[in-house]
Length: 181
Ligand SMILES: [Fe+2]
Ligand SMILES: [Fe+2]
Picture 1 (cartoon, rainbow, N blue to C red):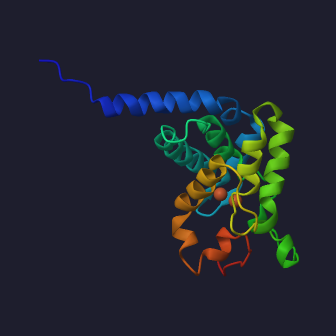
Picture 2 (picture 1 turned 120 degrees about the vertical axis):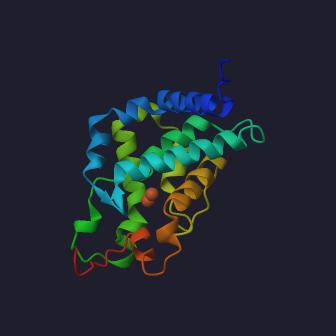
């Protein structure tokens, strides 16, 4: 007798397909692929952004029935581009003033890069989600539900660092080189 296909597995596959179609132009773009070479927390910027984007996508799918205006695609795009900065800050030994450090500035750099390389995918919702993803560090409240989802997904994915006082400076982008780095 044929086994019934698990509907959960099928919906996961369909979700992944839907997700991929939403963000394909970013995932295949040479400028975005360069983020595989930039170290971020315990992996690359590329890996981190993909995780945040997928996490945000799943949260948005769950919330969509309660917030019909919510754009799942904007969440997926902003998740991928939220850390689309160019400067590998962990290698930088520049002594910048506190509020010029990576944690306070990279969201704006990411938004600027996103407009340069993906102007057709940008809108005010994606821009707000990218520029406010470091909330409360940026001291301005995210305006839209898409932004709240991206900042939450970023913290979920960075959980081990956000809640570890020794590692917290790394999440905030404050470069404290370790002896073996
Ligand atoms: Fe960030
Ligand atoms: Fe991030």
